[in-house]
Image (tube, rainbow, N blue to C red):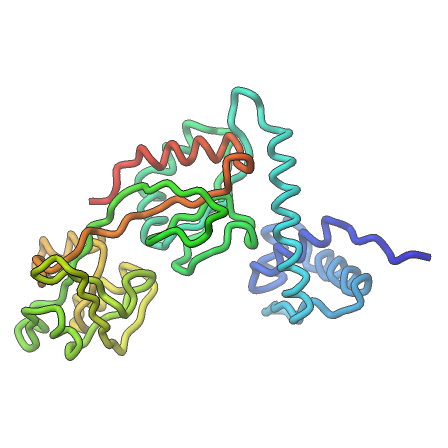
Length: 298
């Protein structure tokens, strides 16, 4: 007798579980009871002959075997999902679900200002927006589109440059009064706030000859969310290198002051990364076109 066949739905369930912190969260997402999910997970573990997850009432984490299984399932399920979406797409009406990863600050800006318009214009398209400052893999994690700062590293993807995002270096008036800076290199000896994803600890500047002048700064405070970094700068924790759109209010109110304006390089650009042309759906094409038309944050 051969090995028992694995239910594809159970494999997809484990991929979903890998994104959840508990069975309760997964049950809510998949609209099934915790007991049903627990039963399905036990059945999959029995069929594969390995424990796949450690779970209790409050927590859930994959075992090493579970992580390996999910890593191999994700691209296969993404392929199947793409095939299904291509079959159900109407010739005239874009439809389906798009899974998008974006930096937290950009995701909040799009949600506040633009995505309602997109969803209103395209009532048959659903969006799953994952706000995260870490780089995410399109294929391995099943994303249709990833928004990133910086250069393209994966040649298997296509890229569209969306908008420049002007940056600035700011600090509280009190900090500037006690520890001013007149040259970027002086930041090495000043308290700094490390705000991810960019520029992290290596802050880019241009010298008087317009040559690259990277400055590695130090900071006891590291944050991965724009508004948290802004509030820390206002509170006097250190100098911060931030997108200008995130600090316009505190600058106008005098709670922050801009420095080193003549030393800043060309602003970084936000890039949309997505699969090659033969793997794109009509819904994704509509979203890319929409993002290209969006007015960038000032």
